[in-house]
Amino acid sequence: MDKHAVQLAPSILAADFARLGQQVAEAEQAGADRIHVDIMDGHFVPNISMGAPIVQSLRRVTHLPLELHLMISDPDFFLEQFSEAGSDAFLVHWEGNNNLHRTVHRVKALGKRVGVAINPATPAVVLEEILPDVDQVLVMTVNPGFGHQPFLHTTLPKIRRVRQMIAQSKPGCDLEVDGGIDAATAPLVVAAGANVLVAGSSIFNESEGVAAAMKRLRATIPVEGSGGAHWRGWPQP
Ligand code: DX5
Ligand code: ZN
Image (tube, rainbow, N blue to C red; front, side, top):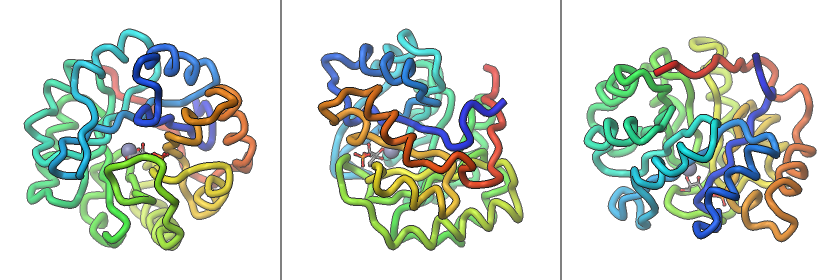
């Protein structure tokens, strides 16, 4: 059953790492639907973030699905260790991957959910052939690599296009957006067709605290949501 028509995926990149477990627990209690974990290698993007030990620690403090957004140059090389650490889903980039179909099917062979991410300058059309094979699409609404960047409004027509593509060829596929999502931009992306919203700074960097920030964000989302996307559950290991 759907927990929420539009799901919130707090991105821990903006969390206080000294209190990570506590902040994730707060997000879970406040109704987060999944936890978004940004993995960066300083090569695919100009920033370094975290690796499998953090995922392993997170696995012990939350029951929520852990989705890993892989912003790394060799995703295939790390899939197994991240799976063993406790991840439930992988988001892999179209950019820089010469064998995306192989990567997608490696994730599926591990029994995990798989999504393909596209950067702001990448057109929706690149998803056409891979869409039937994936559980979700991630439209980046900022350039990947850093939190707290301003939302790129030029991505809104692409979100609408991806929603149409999903309706035509993969109903039930999640349409997730990532970057600059706050109380002002959440209604815009939901109206364009997004049904999973990643949010870092607007959840973890607010002085009011995680629960109040999530409540405020959710209050901006129309109850009817994107009209049609379905929660299809997570594969059992
Ligand atoms: C950026 C990451 C995002 C980031 C979003 O490369 O993929 O998940 O944490 O942060 P905010 O919500 O602050 O834009
Ligand atoms: Zn991300």
